[in-house]
Length: 532
Ligand code: COA
Image (cartoon, rainbow, N blue to C red; front, side):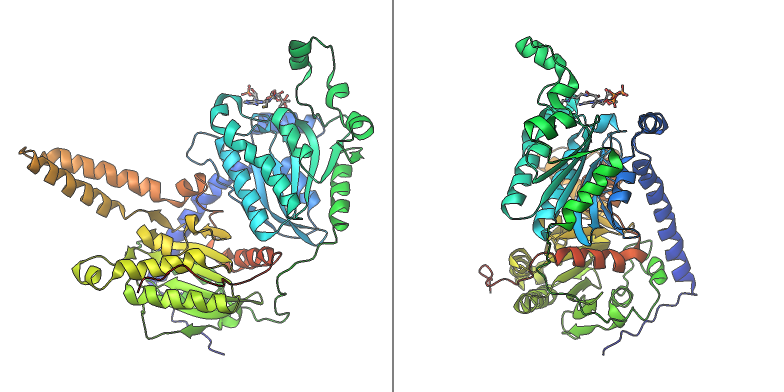
């Protein structure tokens, strides 16, 4: 055992200041999450209840195994976009009859559950997660379909929603639709493309066109029930496999379907006996400094998330601004890469490359803990080959086939975000702490670069440089980049799968690893050409 020895002074002033800053951010986060939980607001929630319907979150709660967790994803989707926070759909991984499933539930209290561009992105991300991790999908359907005013942004890309369902089926990953209400037009293909369909009597309405559209198209007089009622689909069209008497019955039937899937996880089981970390997860709110320029030791984080705080560090004396090593997390073996001093040099890049290859040799999932300002710049480093060394690391990350999990603890800037398996590098799940910031570079640096470029351009034109204008421009750009680097903004754009409380990191990573192990875990057989 190599138990990490913590030196965190949880009684000291530094810790207290860090904690205050983190708790303040967590408070802001909670307020935003409350908006998603509140759905479309009191008026729409009350109307929904008066209709004798369950709220989307209640449907999920009843569907899941009693007292089992729900790993909600992207709860702040749409933040900062003008659409309702949450994106009118709830997605997450939950356990039904002991099977981890991707749950996708429309929130009919938000614009009738209609899908806007953020809802679409969120739904597509959920489908990607389900596919990569081999999770059966359960759609809890009640939606007005496309958000009509924004149809141009969703109609064409939205077709992938239905393609994803049938692709999952082809890959023998089951798809189930429980239809609670409206599912018209394109939405009719949600049940249409699913393996199993349950419809609620007198509630589900599934048709390509409702009575007014039919009247317009063919002149035929019709009504909702004969065009797309649950009873009709169960007895006549055959689109419904099961007719539910009411919502709880639909949920019961849905659970019954999952029970009969004969589901088997293909990944190795975790070790049954594992120790909890030796140190209190509560400390995790006091480790990251409010000012990200102040470095912190990521071993203090690792000590609070891995089993028994037991961490076998690899190459501890080499490339010391990146910590690499082996551990278990909830019984699953993992390799950890964590930034220590922020900057990635050639040594760190080569160390990471070797470490990622080793993890692939042993089919070991990798966890990336981000706090990096990127790869080192400057003559000495360029001449030393920082580009090719960084490229080696990015090659290794890109072609690695073991599952990756990323947590943005602090800074995640520049190509460092890429090398540490940022969003575009396909981590199975990516979470951010409220302290995280991500951008092409820091706000001051970015504003400074713009200023230098503008000054040189003015000089080339033979013009005098407007110093006052420059000051104003720098301040404005700094403010803009700062705002765009914040986790809520990035979460709103679906650039992470959720902002998490640092104290929940072990649990969230454990749930993620368990979901990941529905699929096989297999390392890469080869990588691209490593530039030497
Ligand atoms: N696009 C944009 N907004 C929509 C919408 C859609 N597809 N469907 C509903 N809304 C809006 C409504 O305008 C209303 O907004 P408001 O409260 O700000 O006025 C709000 O969502 C609630 O709609 P409402 O009709 O009052 O709710 P309901 O629960 O009684 O009915 C529907 C819900 C979905 C049955 C009904 O709104 C409907 O038929 N919508 C159109 C469905 C459709 O044909 N979609 C085409 C898909 S391609």
